[in-house]
Image (cartoon, helix red, strand yellow):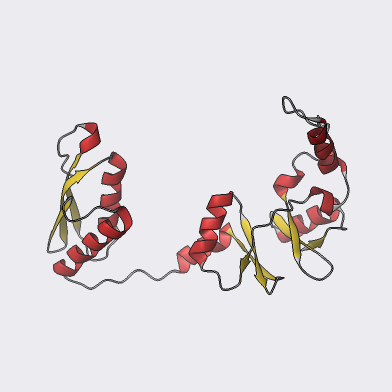
Length: 215
């Protein structure tokens, strides 16, 4: 972490030393006021000549902001001030959604407004790898029930569209979907369950006008 009064060079050195691509910027009382990332430093004058406001039709205000961001030595002038942060009890899936929604790579974690940590995309990968395999009841009836539930809840494909049968771990799915993407999703649902030995799809993609494509 750095202060808004720290130098850009100091922030860059911390990123290098700690092998991180971004740092939270804290106020004197420990509150997050911004984030400085590698992306904020791409157009620095230290990297060579940069044409300020080179974007077509750039206003005088835009050119001025670009100049400050590329030339000021202070972190506070370079950082991104619109910080997306979460409380420490925020579920991992909510954090992942925020990253996807805002196109960001890290999210500060707060407790009563004070920084207590930071979650990065790398941390989400660790969570995926550490997650225990999903358990389901064994047996053909249980497999079929799980597939029907997931198709209905996750893909909104009810029983009138999909017919599921399972025999000795072999899943047979018959029905009609609206796109090839939905067809692939149905297959993914079945593949994601334990104790499934083979999948046979007899699904028609209605929008494509194609007949059933067994697999």
